[in-house]
Image: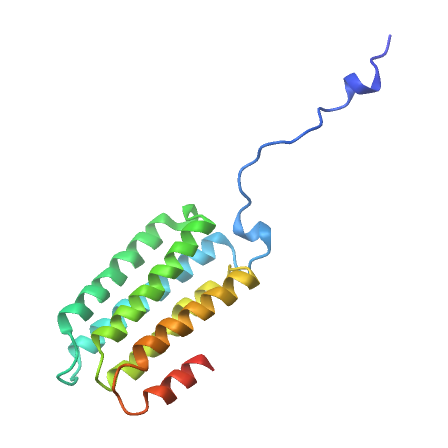
Length: 171
């Protein structure tokens, strides 16, 4: 006697599964590449801060603050490299927001000096990183937050041409 079709068919219903890996939801690069890319960008941030501290600069930079941000970027580079593929999509969201905060802090520590316009170029690093895995809507929200943060810092810097620098940064 054969089983009824209902008894032999696989169970239907909701199956609980783990969250999809970023490469499964249509991101530009794989999770492994994302972690390596993130570590590389944190290293660039760390080295940029170190160069700003070591090279001749004006009297208006907060060297202690820049040292702290540069050290933070170095720690993040090592942590991101060691965690590798284990960093989840939400973890990458947090990393990109931390990068935005770190760049904004670096610009604040270089406030009232021409270096602030130059270091503001570091805003490009987290933007490129987030473009690799954010959804379109989340990326648009991120860009608005970045525009507001960079505008608030640069437009209050008192440096001649800060408004032009901010406009170029937004472009």
